[in-house]
Image (tube, rainbow, N blue to C red; front, top):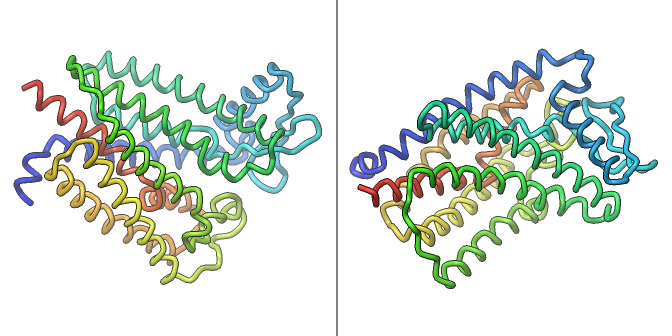
Length: 326
């Protein structure tokens, strides 16, 4: 174990730096949301801005759109014509995704000027992609309302997180002038299958897992402290989902890097992360407070989504590139 930690100390440094920046920015964002209560920009300035720009773009595309404040919750109703098609809540403004992006880039920071320029340009790209995501989702829901669950749960999260992942890979690649060999078709097929499994886990999450928080965080968290839940059953299914995502993620890492030591180290990361995350998760589940739900939501994200994979892939990719250059 000690050998693995020494070998991958650059990856450990990245993970620790990422977590420090991510936690710091999350705390700042939490205070921003608290100070936004009662603001003239409903529900908060950034969400209001995203909503207004989405509305303007929809009108430009020929869809008569209004953004109407929701009277029962802090959100904006997207109304096309006279049809209520969607709502823009705080989670739609893209800031939580920007926090992920910024944390990663700072953890891999190079020269100050280059890092700052990339942070600014990347943030603009993510912001634009997010507004376009809301616009396209609104149009699609207006035309095909029966596909709302698939679009909202799978397609459009994949768009915004995919954009972030590509920006990460581009940033990591700045360290290398190597021409990487094209993957063999078998590797592409295996990667496609494994990624499809992750997508299916997300798509059928309501059928596969007992998790009242899936619907709770869509809307109910605005009104009540906690959903009705069976704690032991909830924890068991959350652990199951983490294990399934983890096993598939380890498979993806092996297909990409074909390095057993990377898999061993990644398994250690997953195990240690699980201990920390599940302790925090249990605290928030047993001691529900509405004021804590921003932190709970973000901690829970690491348990039920393959976020750790999204961090480890570029981290090991960078490790391999720098190792090959020596």
